[in-house]
Structure formats: C-alpha cells, structure tokens
Length: 285
Ligand code: FAD
Image (cartoon, rainbow, N blue to C red; front, side):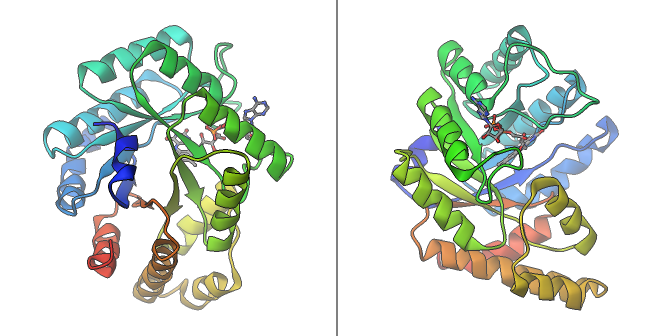
C-alpha cells in the first residue's frame, strides 16, 4: 500500500520507532510493536542507523515484522550519504522482496565517523534515484525551524522543492514544540508550489535529559510554556510525564483543528506514550 494514497481519504496517525541496537534486543521489540499496532496506526516508520550493513538489516527486520506479523504498513527510513548506488539497489531489492512500498528518503547527518561516498550528496539525489529505479512511494523530511545547515528559509524551500520535484509525495517534519513554526513552514511550502501532504512530527516529552539531547541535535527551540514544564518537573518523573503528555496533546489538537493531513508521533519506542496520546484523541481523529 502506498502511504501517499491515504491522504485523499483521511487524516492519518502514524508512529516512528527505532530498531534495537543489539541483535539480542530484537525480540523485545515485539512487546512494543504489539501495543503500538493495537492502536491501529496508518503506518509505522522505522529509523535507519548511520552507516553499516547491520543497521540496514535491523531496520528491514523490524519493518518485516510490522508488515507480516502485525499487518500494519511500514515506512522504511533510508539514508544515502554513506552508500553507493549499488548498495542502495541491494537494499531496495530486499524491500521489494518483502513487499515494502514506502521509503522515507534522507541524506543522513554528516559525521567524521561515517565516510561519505560520491553517488548521493542530498536527499533529492536519493529521491530521484529511487523514483527512477523502482516503484516506491517516496517520502521526504522537512524542518519547521529550518535544517541546521540551511543558510535561510528561502534556500531551505528551494531545496525542499527539489525534493518534491524529484518525486517525494509526502513530507514528514522534524519535531517542534511551537506550532507556529510548522504553520509558517507549510505556508512557505504552498508559496513555493509544494502541494503535497506535510505531516507534523510530534514528540511527547517524558524525560528531561533525553529532550535536551534531542534539541541540541535537531535545533528545535523551547517556547516559554514548554520551558517552564521542563524546569518545574525535571526532577519529578511522573509529573513531567503528565505535563509532557498534556503539552503534546494540546499541540496535536491545535494541529488537527487547523486541518493538517496527519500526525506523526515520535514514540521513542515507548508504547505507553503512544497509548496515552491515542486515548486523548480517540474521538477526534
Ligand atoms: P537534505 O534534504 O539533503 O537537506 C540537508 C541540508 O542540505 C539542508 O540544509 C538543505 O537545505 C541542504 N540541501 C539540500 N539539497 C541541496 C542542494 N541541492 N544544494 C545545496 N544544499 C542542499 N537520520 C538518520 O540517520 N536516520 C533516520 O532514520 C532519520 N530519520 C529522520 C526522519 C525525519 C522525519 C527527519 C526530519 C529527519 C530524520 N533523520 C534521520 C535526520 C536527517 O538524516 C538529518 O536531518 C540530515 O542532516 C538531513 O537529511 P535530509 O534528508 O533532510 O537532507
């Protein structure tokens, strides 16, 4: 099933998970998937580690489980900086063999530890290649507060338009805590002639240390209301959980009432978080 086809019919709810780091932990993912899949998401996306075939294998293995055992549609993330065309061909051949039709095509972060190859420099190169070589529904990433490497919102939009011109059919956003950034980005997209579904990525806060790490990595800013929650409750686990869930739910409800096309939840492999969010919107979405 092609994810892009869903959007003409409904507002979607989807989850993101990451594959376990060690092979020995792979069986534990079942307990997580069991609960996530009971919540009947429209799809579950599986992240892709930076470099190395072990990472690809675990992503594929988890995606296979989601599809075959739980009958939910997987979206496989795929980065390209450190892969050759031949390696991408091998990966997509396996995906086709598994009946997986949806790829979130990414450049991947630059890192001195992961050597880059010459075939792909930007996500748009991978998107064009996937559309040329296979019959995949390709999704791309977007950034409400701009990608940290971008010079300006204008250059960001030009490059985003290159991704959609290359064949991206859906965009999924980086996490953000202030919906105004998301609305501004969607408006910029429409002005730039990008008219595909743009799906907000929402990450409920459950752990102060983790969220601070994420913010440093992805550049999302803390609005004052959110900052107050972190400061007030960072040492009270349960209180932070409750306040973080309420914050995420208020973001989601604001987005849903603004007619966005779907919600993508960064679950951090925590099914309790996903369940609580689903309970909060069960009569809405
Ligand atoms: P690009 O679209 O290539 O953009 C990266 C930067 O290059 C931007 O500043 C852009 O404006 C600029 N740019 C693009 N095209 C050009 C051009 N032609 N000329 C000059 N500059 C250009 N990372 C992982 O390793 N694994 C994952 O599973 C993963 N999942 C993600 C899921 C989502 C929803 C998001 C938002 C990010 C994810 N990432 C993941 C992180 C992502 O790999 C990084 O943010 C990476 O730095 C950029 O990837 P991109 O696909 O957005 O790159």
